[in-house]
Length: 351
Image 1 (cartoon, one colour):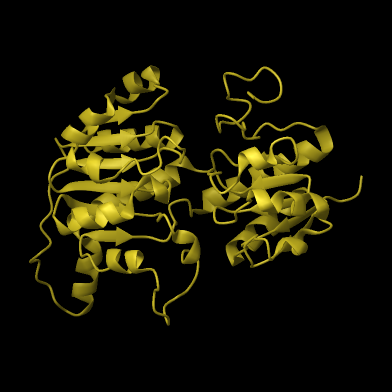
Image 2 (cartoon, rainbow, N blue to C red):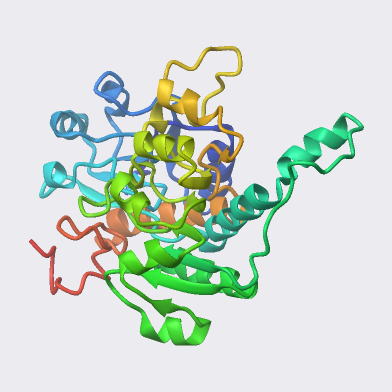
């Protein structure tokens, strides 16, 4: 068999290093493009068996035929999220695989870092002491011990987050459409309905996928049910939060803290350097003005272990499809789960 040819889009230095090192075991032909995949860059995919995409590379309905004409047989996502892919449009035409878990510890630990930093203002203290200013005014936080945390989504990341929060001595409430009662008993959290989480939580952290049901889960109505000065943490998907509603709640002091590793319009800014430019996005620019908002640039996943796991799983996905005809991490086109996890699938997809 000829070497598989893979085109990587939205490639960064760390992607290239990670995948080239991993490819020593696989022997594929790799080509890295800095550009995002788009209707304009589709011609770059011509002659490649697979395209490897990241979270901000869209595959829309109008792009599917172009990928087919280019000879692409597989879309390999080097991420867990898949909301950038029109699954209905590619159904029956191009298979889509992902990396369902690369380092759930990395994401959960980053969420915990956002909580601690927002609470104890360590980022501001660092800047102050660098100027030889050793005062502590404005840095008062609160004990996490004894407080209530609400975890929305108890997949691998959410369950690890529950364990971290329990380690702080917090009461942990969780919400998920698919309850894992065994994990709840082992870790020590309890499931509750969503309104109870809104009403009783001092901190709410989001670890659920973006679906039609979860889009804008955090909005003016849900915020109105929360404790005054609640802390909101999002390391999952930007559109879980209606950012305009969040800004209004911050202005009214309904939300006391917001830690965001994702943003609903991040594709125009995240992973790019705009330090010498003016941000045209008025909503993002407004968010950056709040002293109680901490934004990181979609880096929760970014650890050495995660990059290695992403590269290995992605290359395995490609190898198993082209050499063995199997797709262990294919996305179910109806429910979004991996086809090996979807309870409705016997063969094929749950359509």
